[in-house]
Image (cartoon, rainbow, N blue to C red; front, side, top):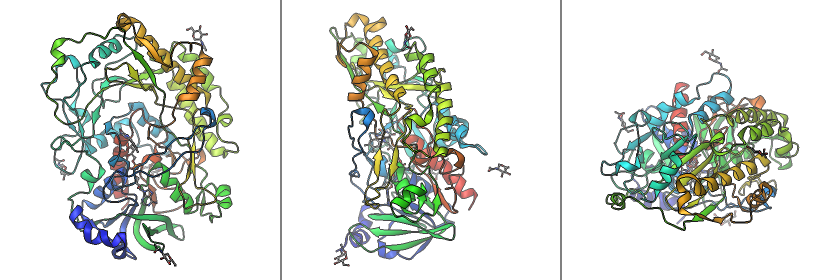
Amino acid sequence: MAPWTCLLLCGASLVSGAVLGSREASGKAYDYVIVGGGTAGLTVGDRLSESGKHSVLVVEYGKLSGGALYDITSAPSPGLGNRRFPVDVGFVVGGSSAVNGMIFQRGNAKDYDIWGELAGGNNTWSWGNLLGYFRKGIQLTPPKPEVPADFNLKYDMKYWGDNYTSHNIFATFPNNLAPGMFPMYQALKALPGVNVAEDSGSGETGIAYWMTSTDPRTGARSFARTGHWDNLNRDNYHLLPETKVNEIIFKDNAAVGVRITPSGANTSTIIHARKEVILAAGAIHTPQILQLSGIGPADFLQRAKIPVKVDLPGVGSNFQDHSFTDVSFRWTQTPAIPSHLLNTPRPDNLGRSSLGISLSLPAISPNFSSIAARFAAQDPAAYLPPNTHPTIIAGYRAQQAIYAREMLRDDFSFLRVSASGNPTFTPINIHPVSRGTVLINPDAPEDEPIVDYRGASNPTDVELSVEGIKFLRKLMTTGELEKYGAVEISPGKGLESGEQLAEWVRARSVPSVYHPVGTAPMMPRELGGVVGGELRVYGVERLSVVDASVMTTIVAATTSMSVYAIAEKAADLIKARA
Ligand SMILES: Cc1cc2nc3c(=O)[nH]c(=O)nc-3n(C[C@H](O)[C@H](O)[C@H](O)COP(=O)(O)OP(=O)(O)OC[C@H]3O[C@@H](n4cnc5c(N)ncnc54)[C@H](O)[C@@H]3O)c2cc1C
Ligand SMILES: *[C@@H]1O[C@H](CO)[C@@H](O)[C@H](O)[C@H]1NC(C)=O
Ligand SMILES: *[C@@H]1O[C@H](CO)[C@@H](O)[C@H](O)[C@H]1NC(C)=O
Ligand SMILES: *[C@@H]1O[C@H](CO)[C@@H](O)[C@H](O)[C@H]1NC(C)=O
Ligand SMILES: *[C@@H]1O[C@H](CO)[C@@H](O)[C@H](O)[C@H]1NC(C)=O
């Protein structure tokens, strides 16, 4: 029995939504066809189908459940000793939200204002505008009263939803906090320029405990499938799993459907879209599908023998992820923890929270202004791939001016660390300035795309990592923590000069924490953008992108919460033009 037939018959026992087999879906027409049943795709599907007025089909390559990932290895990064890295994205209904680490964070308010600043035109993208969508999309489980007050778990419901019905996504404070965090919290709080945020969702830099994406009633993962598909049982909301979208079908200049192939089969069929095709295949596969459909850099598409529909150089450019190194110490004298904290409340099986610290450049480096000045003076073309299209260079120049400005400020972070209580850290470049690419393989366009992080291709990223290491050394060996005699394990003794540390960073840093974004950026076409503020793809009609690809610049946080907010807002934009 072919796998899709089994899904048709067996699927009903797995979930009670309208899961289709490809034979049923084949040749059919829906108002909206959504490509990718991941974090954004299912959120948009839920919102567009909830009135009952429109029919929606979500086509997903992965299975209904399980923990699968695509098997992709990056191109080598010359800036990082030619190392290659795994490119992990979810390959299952729910997408990456089904497999991610469940650390649930929001970026700096500035992140969202910068999207608006770069979007041009009528700007409706800003922190102020998105906060309403964060509140609509994410429901808070507040900390339990039995968590000791010393931890100072602050929150304010003005940043969150409080709708505890099933079809929601939850941000949950577990009551399991490592007592060892307490001395770390005090040491960080005492540093100059380090703010204690009033809520981890307040958009401030500084110290805040992060939450987990956990359903407070069951302790199970709260993700796009549980929040926006399971048990909705709507006649007008269908899901077709185990089916790959090969390309978008156009009539004249309008997207009118998609060509699909069921997993394991070798014949494709077409599904029609009456109103819009919505691309939500994530930052790795959305640019691939656009390029396979003839939308991308014309010269490159010609080399890959793909007929050019729209010359849109930005498709697959502007690729970003967070990068990290490992910095660790051991105590010679373990910090004393107040005894009442040692008997923390009974674990509630809602996961484990930790301290997250998001730090501006002035807070980590006395040399912040010279770093900013050097970055501002760069020729942007020098650190982008050879022969980069002038519009992409212009778009990068706009980002460069904004980041150089923000490097001087205290409300935009460049370093993020978590402090679990152990003296080990993975300092993260939270706003890296290197830019990579995601392009189809010209020799095998239907295979996985070529993912090139171009990690540390811009030397400023190495400088930022070096400043992060120096900051952690200072934190651990001076001030509040000095008395515990921390001994450095990594990078380790003997690596003192800026050059030595830079060399260590290039040998050790990893350019991804599985947060790929930016490959269909929301910017004007003259700046290398792929979509405008309405999320519609330039040069064609009835085609939009709703996923992490549209983030022009990456957020100072794990990415899923921001993807949910983008999808909630996108649903309103799409409904408004229905
Ligand atoms: C291992 C891992 C750990 C992470 N940890 C965290 C974390 O702790 N906290 C956090 O907030 N974020 C984390 N993230 C990142 C976060 O989950 C993602 O940024 C977010 O879920 C991306 O949402 P999306 O809608 O853009 O894409 P996705 O959710 O990835 O959805 C894309 C969907 O499109 C489907 N698709 C792709 N191509 C096709 C095609 N041709 N045809 C049909 N379907 C297709 C995919 O199978 C997938 O289901 C992690 C991600 C990973 C992979
Ligand atoms: C901006 O908004 C105005 C008023 O709503 C509208 O007339 C105009 O077309 C919009 N411009 C763009 C670029 O969307
Ligand atoms: C709570 O969420 C459910 C599911 O999304 C929705 O139907 C309901 O209207 C919401 N209630 C409120 C008060 O917003
Ligand atoms: C693919 O097509 C070939 C011939 O057209 C056929 O022999 C083969 O069985 C097909 N494979 C699958 C998996 O359907
Ligand atoms: C960093 O700043 C210090 C003083 O704060 C200065 O002595 C040093 O030269 C600066 N280094 C760089 C690389 O700018």
